[in-house]
Length: 153
Image 1 (tube, rainbow, N blue to C red):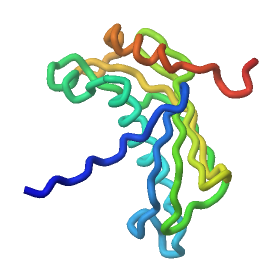
Image 2 (image 1 turned 45 degrees about the horizontal axis):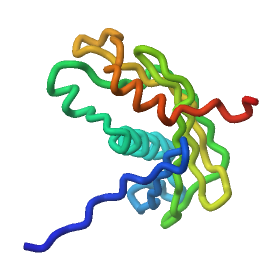
Image 3 (image 1 turned 45 degrees about the vertical axis):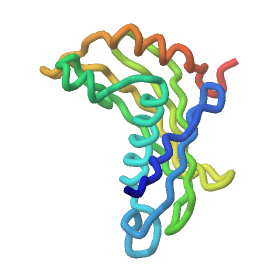
Image 4 (image 1 turned 135 degrees about the vertical axis):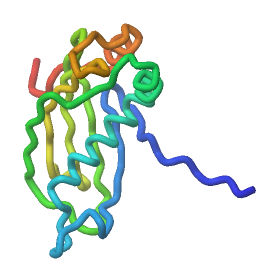
C-alpha cells in the first residue's frame, strides 16, 4: 500500500508558531484576491496545529465531554491582499493564559509583507456552553510558549 505524507503542522520558533498555507483558486474572489474570511480559516488552522504540537488533544476533550475552545473575542485588520498562488505564512503567539481562556496574536505574511493580523481570545467552554477552567496540563503547555505582547518592554 502506498503511504501518503502527513500535512504540515508548522513548527515552533521559540514562542512563535509558524504555519504556511498556499492561496488556492477556491480562496479567491473573481479578481484573484483572497476573500477576507479565508484569513480566519487560515488562522484557525494555524491555532489548531499549534495546539496539536503542544500536545493538546481537542478532539479527545470534546469526546470525553470535558469541553472545547471557542473564539470569544476577535479583532482583525487587513493591510494588503494575498493573491492566487501566494504562499502565506501565519505566525501565532499566545500572549496571556488565564484559567479558562487564552489571548493570542496572529499575523499573516507574504514574504516580509504583513497582510493581516488578528488579536483574539479563545475560551474553554463546557458542553453546555459555559466557561470552565482549561485542563491544568493545557495551561502548562501554553505557559511554555507564552510571550509578552509585541511592543511590550
